[in-house]
Length: 573
Ligand code: ATP
Ligand code: MG
Image 1 (cartoon, helix red, strand yellow):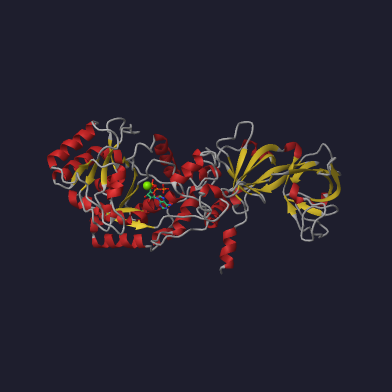
Image 2: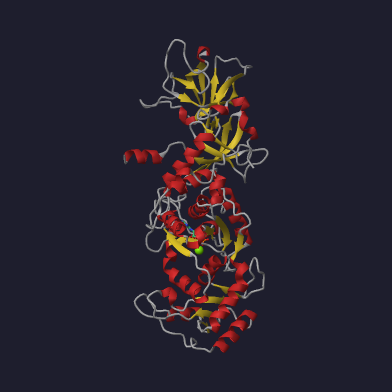
């Protein structure tokens, strides 16, 4: 969309292929021993019940990264087993986001729903072998019968139905003869197992709802537990990587695969990403959207990939962050300042610099001719010589940042004040000679003089100024809107709330500031949605893709300039 491209660096860095985390060690060992014939085949398996967030990025970068590093393949597979919560909108958004992150699954886009018939046939097979039964207990009763960690469960009175009766009932479940919730198909494993997942888990439930892909073909739907391992098996996945909460589901997945006697992938669990000041559960993100705390899934304050994209975060920064944090089996919370550090590092390299005054104060240069415009040379990116320079207009009336002036400055304030001199970036030294106020005593204009000998920013007589400020020529300025964002949550751990409240109590009421009267240098008049810049001294900004119109450019601040992570890292030595 934007015409200034973010450099698409290789999706995996050389360091990553050297990294020695436990998953890579495991895979190397499997390759060494010839397990899976030396193949590496991973998958990213999202459920299309919400938009992807930065936590999913960790899993995407890991799974696609492993495939790249080991010369294997990675599938994109939707775990679309619950039509009540899933939709095509989510499928489309997830596809867009994984592509945007820089990954390609070739022809290997799959859906659990592609396998519904196979899963059904396998379920009949388990019934025939006495390993599954139709249960008439209600969902509440099933929960009640299940027992607890310290107490064994109780067997359902329907557990010992004959194979014939089970087959007949299961087929009638499929045919739609029974109301929703009235029956389930359960695996017949062990109601006394210390692992609750093995206490006759539900394999199918009746849901009379159309599915976004299979329409009304089905009114029974497989549970995630019944579908997931078999989908991995059908796709020939070698390393089925998931987060730690599935560790004690692994014995169940093993049981299903062994009972069916089919190809058996290796499941490996890792700790999910948690970030300070952030919630990363789709259930909670949905609430933020539905309760109107934010302006949709792609609100620039959201930790979703679409929100980060709209905010101006480059995909390469997210990949670099995910590779840097790596994977482990120990749950932890990552400081969001680290993510911000990677965002700045990436943007600093390639974003063009521009001058924009966010909160303008008018400055009249009294000794500058009224009808004159000079074009001054400004550097596009000091980090990149090939970026060249551009011309910015200078004239008698300028805007500077309101907070770059103080009428009564403290000693350490080196910018403009009555009688003081500062350097205008790429321009001249100016001195404030008078202050104009309105009836309320508010400063509305500064009267200044400039020194024509200081063009380029240096005085031939060797006199120094302590401050350099940015500015925009008033008659040439473009009016733009600028949106500044602060963290969506006011506290490090949004879940930390008093009794009776929930995470929404920690929402930061000042997370959005809209500046409607910012003044930009004229080169920004043709900025396109998605374009990203550094505004000198103000941070990194991206042209908003929703609110920008042909008449008016709206900028989102991606991030400020000050790298709090670098500071923390220095302090910690
Ligand atoms: P959520 O808890 O946000 O609802 P989920 O695990 O239910 O997430 P899925 O769509 O099932 O969401 O996730 C797809 C894949 O992404 C899974 O393999 C899951 O383990 C992984 N994943 C989800 N959240 C994180 C996270 N915070 N860190 C790392 N991986 C994650
Ligand atoms: Mg899930």
